[in-house]
Image (cartoon, rainbow over all chains, first blue to last red; front, side, top):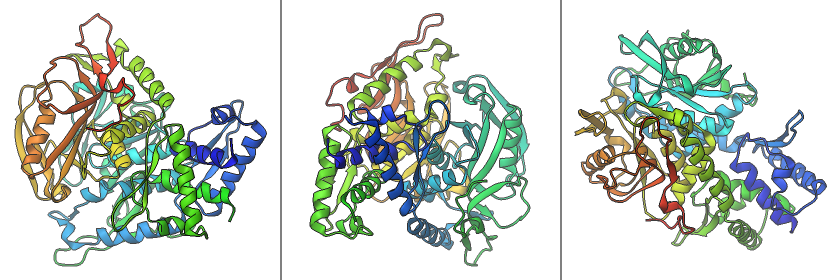
Length: 276
Length: 276
């Protein structure tokens, strides 16, 4: 087998499976090559990816060993993403009654989901999460995209009890935006043992929903390693959850005034991908 | 730049962006190479991928031209997926009251989502869809995964009207499993003009939900190019929608009896990826 063929197959295998531990024997499967040249190839791939900020190949410590591809969004694509989405979200035709912003198109855009998922995965790469948790409905696509790049299972908290979820734990909480008592429940089977959860949602105003998810997770004795949303409001500045990340920040919407959406400060610096 | 570096970067670019049209100038960006050698590289990548059934690079006809990566799941991975999931879903501890099967873990499993999404994307690659439509909640992750591989926007029909969806079209329908009148609504802004929708859901029994989505879409003058679910029941054999695909088939659940889940017949043959 020619070296070019090995590179094509190896890169395809890696990029198809972000954050998946692959042993050298799994990687060599079908490649008909010696382990020494395979290691050289992997090192070469790592160097090329790192050189243009497109992720890396990490060695996994421990008895099992192996390597895994860790995604990253190259600088130019990241800048284009923030510029493009800031512009799209600042469109004042998006304003809805109650100071909301129409975002369903953005939350269903495959490119937005893919880049956002990679950015959040990079930020929480070393946070040690073993499950992604979201609340239905609008945060689910972003949670799926993030779970793909962290290679973690996804658990979806429901607003109503459903027979299809089996035994579930439920809590009640007061929704900040709707000012009424709401229910949130999570299937017992959906949560891993000793869960370390990364909470993903689409939008945060005061953080009441995220705080409720945290309460619900505490009923599972789960630890929350972080909370991330696509868009958070700048006010109130003090949210009900402390350790959150937002990709974008929205100023209060005043009817007749332009909408202001900016890249959240945490993503302006070049070290934005350093994890919690 | 060495040829190995070009291969690494090109394969990464393609696999990162399934079904995205890329011009040769976009591909050559940062590669510092002549268009002729780039075309040779792309042809080489196409040959290697096709040789082991891992997708292809297609040329796009028309004035814009360009190429795109089209995903496919290699035979061995596809067989392993069907064998593994048939076994997991046949676990009788999954049975729930009312003849339901607990599937939330599977529907939140990143590997299941990724392979299922690729299989459905391959099946509908040439169906001409321009939007993926699903109904909240459990079908959303599979819809996101399919939308990623077809590079299509996702629109989520809601069970209740929500302020965040803006103006919406609603219908009422009778749910087969719950035997009561339900509402389903879809944001007007979420649908493209001249929509051609692929409906994705997690589960189908009689097909009432899918038929309701179809009715809702007809209010948008949208065409439905197909309906696909992860799991359909073998009974009733006559569903309320005709042109559907399921990855798996479930026999009626009888308490105390083993659960029978099999690979749906449409995926048993080697030509399962031929589209509608």
